[in-house]
Image 1: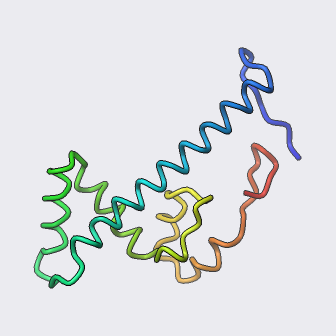
Image 2: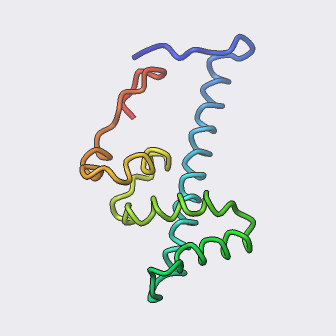
Length: 122
């Protein structure tokens, strides 16, 4: 395993605690991003699409919840490509988003990539 680089101002124990907390927050952020994308899916469920309905729902919802419409669209587009049962809670939203239109995404998401910083597969 590779040695974790520490800032000069922190002990190893302090830094590991900060990194653990940061990883936990990233998981929460990913969960919220998917939840917002799923909210758009719910708003569209059972309604016709094809003549700007998706864009209209995204813009209206974004304005009313205080979100950026482009960001909300990204959350929606990613959530649509990743059914709940195929998502990995321990993999950040940005990885899901990057793989969203890759045909083999469901296979790729199961493989833990090597993290050169920690020296772990995660």
